[in-house]
Image 1 (spheres, helix red, strand yellow):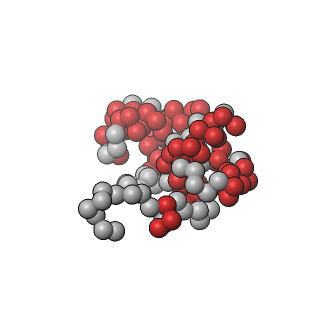
Image 2: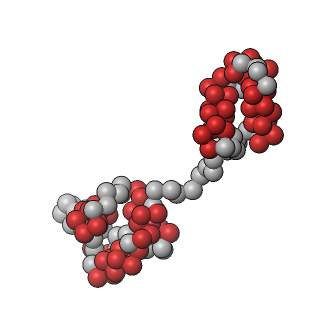
Image 3: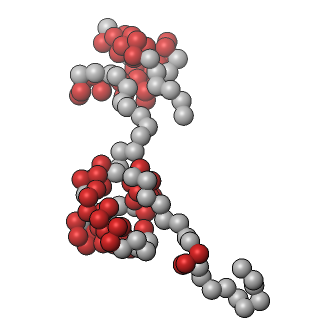
Length: 130
């Protein structure tokens, strides 16, 4: 993933537009995209800053952290639940619709794994020796 443009460049571009340069001309002069200049100028007008937004990290699991104790107790009480079943129970109990990958990241963060073991092995065809 590419890094964000420097704050210094953002300020110079926005200052050039505020001094009367068109957005298109500022984009050409500073060698950035026209839509980028438009976003920076409108960001300054609406938020008061043209700074880059934070990137990376898991932003979708914050709602799950609010129900951390409930989820961990559920898995402790019923360790054979699948992520799909946990997802359905979360929806029924708390009205949260979360993806399986979001649940996976939540449990990985809390060091809970869903692994097969020999006690839960599926039966295979009779000609296979496992």
